[in-house]
Every structure is written in C-alpha cells, then in structure tokens.
Image (cartoon, rainbow, N blue to C red; front, top):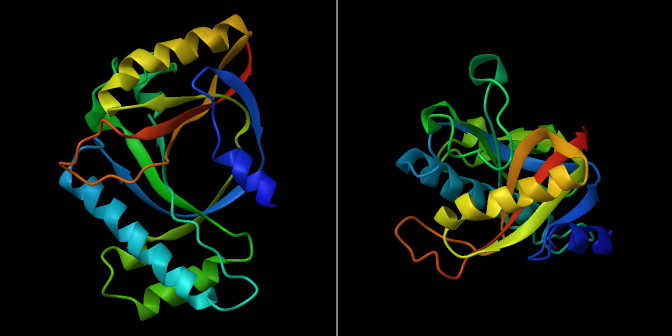
Length: 202
C-alpha cells in the first residue's frame, strides 16, 4: 500500500505512461475559472475538512496524514465538444469549466463517516457539500510541471504530443496534483504539479 501511494504522487519531468488504480477521495464540486475567490475558499475548506477526518483516526492503527490537494477538471462535451490535452485551457471559455477539488483518503473511510464529520463540524465552510468520490483513471499520460500554472500552456502540448506519438487520446478528466501547497496571491515559482490525463488507444 505504501509503495502504491508513493507511485501515485510521483512523476518525471519527461512524459510517461502510467497505470493508476482505483482511489478514494474527499471532494467538493465547483465550476468556472480556477482563479476565483470561491475556488480558493473551497480549496482552503477541504484542507480543514481533511484535518477533521484525520483527527478521528489519530492514535489508532488507521492513522493517516494525506493532505495533498488535487483537482479534476472537465468540460461538458455535449456543450463544447471534445477538448484535447494540449489545448485544454485555451479553446473553451473557462467559465464553462467544471472541477472537483479533492484530497485522497484511505479506503476505509466511508461516505457515512464523511457525513458524520460534516454534522459535527458545521463551522467549516461548505461542510455539507463534501462528498466521497472514487475514480479509476487506468492508463494515463503524465509529467511533472514546475513553476507557475501559466506555464502549463506550454507543458500540456508536450504531453499531448507524447500521447499522440504513442497512439493514445484523452479519454477522461484532466487531473492536477499539487505537490506544493499554495494560496491566492503567493508566488508560484516554486510549485510542482503533476499533470495527468486518462487516455485510451486511438
């Protein structure tokens, strides 16, 4: 299990193909640009909610310390059509973007437990909006992006070219794993972000 977690949070700065098995998350949905105040408010709230979950299992055999924030992004293809990896952020109005902010949790944490924590911790913003989420990405292409998010506009086409060269096409949500925490207004020069996209054979 520990090796599985290590591999999940590991990526090279060169594109690669990986297999990602089913994972469980605490998550919250949203829509629109990822730079809005509501986006950052939900990001901060999920960190607080995850801390509350961890306290329930502290000093037990099930204690855990997961706190890396991840975001799944997608567009409604019925409205905007197919959006590929390389132009994910550049061809559609970001007001139409859908997202799920998530933190990976251990498989023994149930939806019922999440509801119990929400009932006890109503002081955490959006407490009743957090939900259990499971996702199996399967075959993915990924790479490690270093620096500001704006630089992803140059990094994602590299990932796209790699996928195409290997006979693969985007077939799931765009997934970003923020290995370095950040808040609104902070410098992004030091950030490291895994960019991961589920793919299938062309």
